[in-house]
Length: 405
Image 1: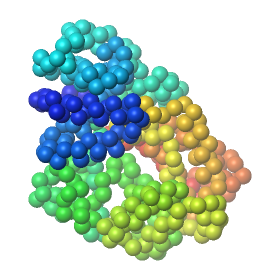
Image 2: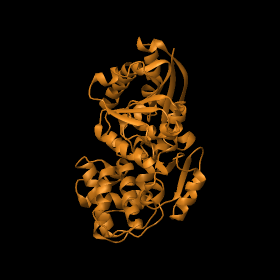
Image 3: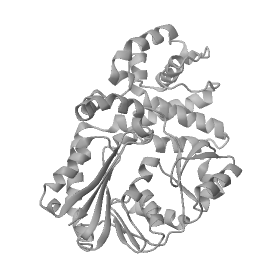
Image 4: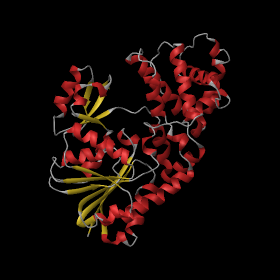
């Protein structure tokens, strides 16, 4: 497990962490929503306290299987969660206070068990057996380093809104607000010292969006330009649509589609903050929404629903919520989307298929299957790119660009 800097343990913080973990695992809530609710519950907590609580929740979710194996069973109540917290600190080499909540923990025994488990990849990397088996089947010798990289803590990456500023100026502005960054490439900045990014004037003025660098590579891959008609057909809250609009220099038409209208509502708010006016949001209510767009787009982005196995660093609770049936079913959905939505493109238009998965069955194999289908015969593959977290240090991603002949 990655080592954290030692920090004093305070019962109120650990109680909040234990209660949040119970809500995630016993009640089935998503980690990000639970953390948001937990941090709102006590306004007296400072930035360091809030960071401590959030990071500990995420880390225990990330290492859940390893921790409960060392404990001797899955936690069932708040006292059990306290022990999970204690075990994490023991194997990180930190001393525990002599509190009653930790009295049953034998540090030497736990460290000995931890050393013995290092030959069991699924447990030591804290992942379900079925997921480890699937990863090995699909990625073979690339799976162990991929899995290990997916357990690293995710960095915070920003994308500069080039309609309003540039990376150098944004970096200076954020530094004046106590946030340090360093440039990566293009419009991306890595945050090296952070406070609350969303309370900064730079964010309120729409100077940046939080977006991993792998995700930032999708919009340039689409090869858009000013004046084009672009359709982002699985747009969600619009992270990539906003980036596309910037590359289009806010000129042309960008139609954002999604089956979830509430996500499009959030996208409109983000577009206003970013100073973007070319985005038109349309909820997908039935097949007519797609039929009306037939043969009309210069570019079509299909950032399809997927397993999300490339972004486990950011969403570690996905490891425990995903099922083999979900992965099998989502492959069918992906193929249905690419075959039916591909009709949106006009001749010489380009379709970009993207996922945040590392599995070839969701990526290259889906492209191959589409090209072999009747709708796919009208297309040719221009380029495809797989991004593995151990190779570039960012999220796992896949993108393929196909031209309609």
